[in-house]
Length: 397
Image 1 (cartoon, helix red, strand yellow):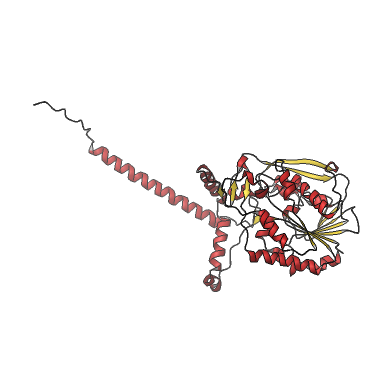
Image 2: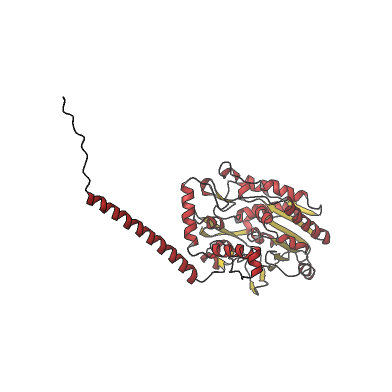
């Protein structure tokens, strides 16, 4: 009978097994302790920290602690408002958002917080069209305004964003509604006495130029100038040649609103150019702030996160601009932030310009039109803001 080789089985010392069990228990306890310590630290930071009222990263006002009442609790309003407050004021939020975004990007995700990450690190804001009822109400408000002021020259520029103009750079199959279709739908419902201005074709023809920021939802000054020439053609004005502006690059380290929303800075920062009219003097009055200037630019914002606010110092309820333009032509601009870098192009055509942002303006618009003897009105919005914001409804209030 052949001798069978005995299979070698290493002897495991009982003492070694015991050491492994002790090590694993100790490791589990340490991990649990570290996790509990982390949670306690986060809770303490949230208790001890001072709430901010404004986020420079997101360029918006943050939610405040809601007042508790039995009625608000039972209705669910308190819970909803408290959740918004916690989300806005959570300690270390920026870091957590950045980690989350980096992990999602590594996994191949191309849509984060309704922001698409496109080719050449171009960021796009998702466009989701509102209901037909919402759009109809906004159109009706503008029609009501135009009927009330049928003696004024009223025009409406509704411009597409980079999401439409640069759509070839969007991720494949990105779930996105069509801004151009939305613009055409809005324009089709307006009265005949509202001149419509859609700069899509001109912007699209120049899409290889630097007409939109990569990290921000705004157009650049060059994009705004292209739209300005379209406006002039539509309104029978002679555009000021681009050579009549002094073009200065004021920063090349701008990371805008879209990069802030997803918590990361792209591989490439944006640059900001300002177009300063060479042959125009004007006085700018920021009415509510009781501040006057001889410039439409505020360079102090170049040292801040929101560098786009170099244009007019951001959004204001009312700005009054007096120029050397035609004293008989007085323009009212009703706008969103796309107009901020657009305003310098208007100064040679009107003797006085009043700029109203309905998101912040709560005074009597009718009285302003009467007192300032307005002759022309320009509505200027980008498609995404006009679609998502309902402050335009105040025009008929």
